Image (cartoon, rainbow, N blue to C red; front, side, top):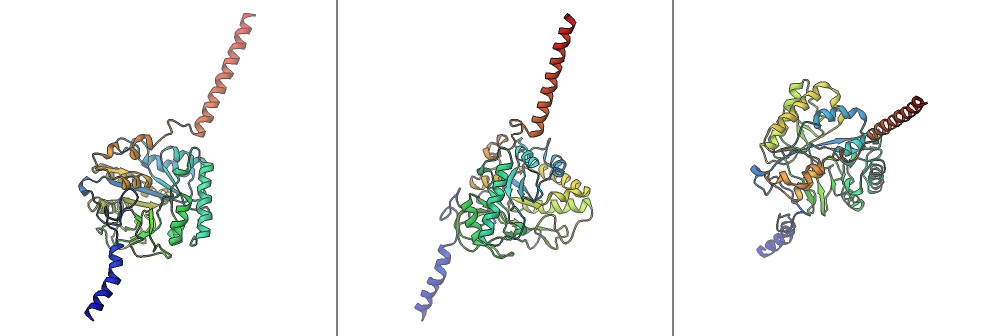
Length: 368
């Protein structure tokens, strides 16, 4: 009987032990990173990454908010501009504005065409392929390898089919699966590859169960509300809504500090630009960004830059020369003219040509 029990233990437990992810043993960067709450680097040497993921359509009304929050003169510690990510849905998007966002150095990801519930492979393929094609065709200068991230509407995925479809289409990461925190000071998991499946509770089925080597998942980690009573899956959808600028500022900073003073896992703010229509919200975020950047080695980067760091971790002294975070990789508007700049240049040239024509005619008239 004892021998049978030992054999049963080996047959049932050993497969799960041997299939467990061990960083540096059966999982190696840059293609594999285990799920963990503790990065192999010493937390005191890790730069604190902060990323903003904005969902849905992009309109001209977003420009003043983005200019105020992420434009000049704010810089990251390496002297380069801040960057954010847009997960763009096809509806209600002005692609000329989206072009300006891209040439500011902001990352563009896909968030479907119709913003409907997408829970099967066929519909996901249609939506993910068509919306990426929309971005490629209608945003100047965007190449296929620039649109690498997908976010599901309502964070509802197609389960294991989601990863397979996205991989086949050339996407390299998903940012749809959710993780909740028990309280403000609970540690947050790091981004991971799905080589050994999704290790956390499934909140919005279907979820990922199988192994998907090399595909990155950036968890949507719920924030805790300003009272630390409930989870906010999206930053701007708390049940306990803030009522004042001070409450909102507290809400942002308490969640930021839970990362900064914790395990240094990237701090994600998943939200919608329209939240800034409320002046108190805009003021609170403006203050919070200044406060976050006043802490040592805090970088506001896009999600693609977060994953670049995950593939090739750099300590805070090395990251100043880290190419994916360099100035050459963030903004190119000085090198490529926007549509409005081209129109203005043509107008000036036309006016100059008319002026020269009139002056030549006038001089000829004077000589008569």
